[in-house]
Image 1 (cartoon, helix red, strand yellow):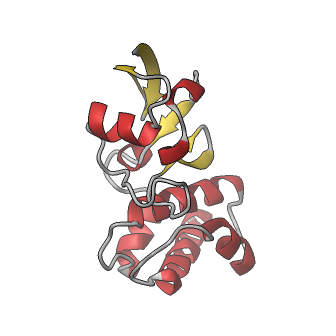
Image 2: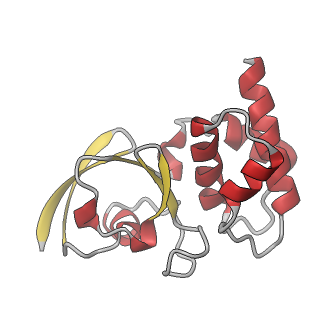
Length: 155
């Protein structure tokens, strides 16, 4: 076991875990940040997506020992009151059906908009490819991303 001092959602948190423990399990089991979901365990579905710095990454395959001093943002840390433009658009468009994949979807969408504030349809599809929604809400996801773009441009 090793002690890690992690920057998560603007706070420094300490954990004592094996070096190879995936961040998904550090977040869920050790820090009780359960918004990040387990989907496949092989970084293929996107349910476990968090931000490492400004990049969307799959936390199920990210060992805690590789995080270093980089900031991690989970769905809980995206906005204090759930009022990030993407979160607001998600609610306005009524994107979730079962909701299981939505935290990962939102984290991927916000990373996209951070690096590209006005993505084309193709850029949205490329960025969101690999985030699987078993309910098939892809049309609403794309519409919500476009709404968030519009909201941030008009703000």
